[in-house]
Image (cartoon, rainbow, N blue to C red; front, side, top):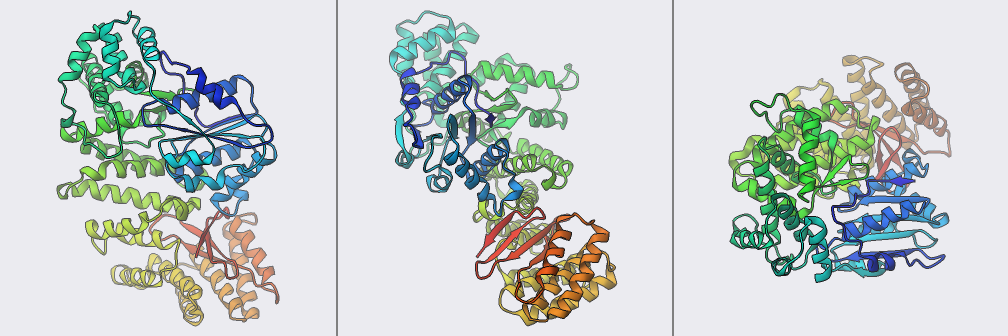
Length: 614
């Protein structure tokens, strides 16, 4: 079984057998963690990918590839591995449980299994998912020095002179010369830079000396802002610039530049061809005179040109397109200086809006939803350094997309684990750029409070809804329901019951007895009565709520099942039940909140994915 997208071998790949041999030495009966470390551009990912391809060819039981630059990527990858192993994510109480089940499975039955975590940036976040026993092999690539403490470190260094010249000879088809040796030395023997140089030399049939002269004529200070801790040899970023210019000069359509710029704004793990096809259809790349409509075939041809220039690589079956982080950084900073980056970002933002609308309920297509969220997060991260006050329109567009991403994570049960403080930052940005009473600001507040108790923020949002929408508006009534639940969990049980009683009466009158919001409040009031030891009243309300849920959602719907179980649990001595709340500011945002005695509040979706909120 293969999970994830193992990168394909690049042109003229140097196998580096000594490193592959070290990786192959796994102790029997012991989980072996190989930390492949080194600075960017040395080829860590390609060494790991070569080893993974070799294990696939050897017929290993499982080979999994996980883009691990952030926790969202780790969890997404582990979810894909779980699916290949027959572990259903819906069986887990929290998203982390998926990773823990994968770890446990590999500890018990991991013979001839390989798990690759590529580009790890946070060792502490990864550690809980690493097998502590068994025969599975784990391979980690990282530029973080602390990753070496996880297992046997394998340092991936730059090419030797012999490897560099062998690469030049194979990639360009030209004999090496003193100029080739001088060029390799100028580039610090860094595989990434050598690949850029060789691609241009081969495409333009240049003498090595000519390329070296051009390389030395470029002042990269015009494009690349130096960053601490990046020990790139002189000429590395310049070689990227030369490669981009060489492709651009051979591409009359400018499609190659547009594609590369788009990839530079996407997550580090890459983007699918399907997304690029959608971008082309949506006009993100524009139209060019005399060429007719942009087709998928034209995009594929442009991608092939970029791959030939070593500016892009493909993963798995070729459906994923990735680029090295230095390449994407050079592209972003050049386009920003040229005034092109932000208009492109606006086009991608509009495309993501359309894709989100087409996606609908994220729970129906979890993989696509998680990928869309990562794209929104990456777009915001990459554009933010270049946004100014005059770019208010794009700032507002990004906030709307970020609110959607936050809601989407709420629906998937991932919110508390992958956003960190982004919710607070979103509320701050929304208030600053949209104003206190803009619907986007209100939505960001509500999606943020979904994973922590914040009664003052609930109260403030309810007051804003009353002022803007009125006492009887459905969104105002939903805010009351959620505030009532917060009161209950904050120790204000009497206030919670009074507010739920008021909300239920108004919803029944305004929305009708069988509206989902009315059923939700009836259900929640029943639970509140249980906590107040008013069990006979609770049982009566549970029965009414259950009958309504059966009519509206059907006998087998998860919410109906929850209500049925909690009706039984209302008998004296049981006392375990669930809240139902609504994710305001988002269409059909329903959450089940399980109260687990003294352990906190667990917020999740109808599929019982849960996130603990202390």
